[in-house]
Length: 112
Image 1 (cartoon, rainbow, N blue to C red):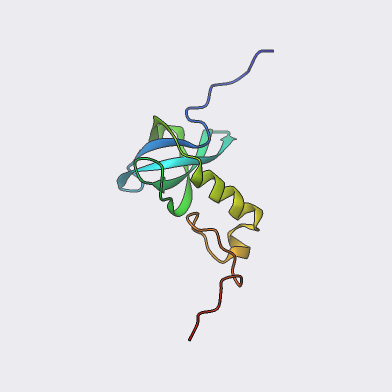
Image 2 (image 1 turned 90 degrees about the horizontal axis):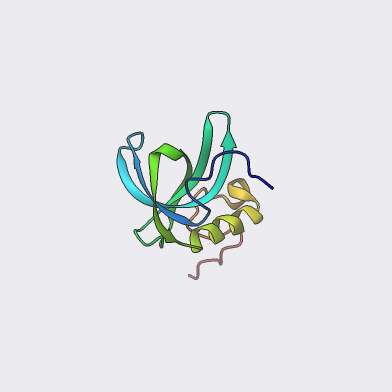
């Protein structure tokens, strides 16, 4: 069976170097989702350190031309993202970040 279309620039869980003038800075990130659009493929990235650890902040969609794959893999950011989506997404969690696994109302009460 023959595949039709272009190969993906980066696979899910790939660590990439993002150099986007739109954001005004360069950073490392991990691909946590992929979608094809009319204008081209887009990748959902979350900012991490150079090794793909310590995800932080909100995930953002990037075009394939704004990053370069580094050849490394990181599984944790993708697991956190999928777990958060299973819990109901940002609207139900009360948090847009993809660095923590929590649900609004489930956190323990602070002790006085």
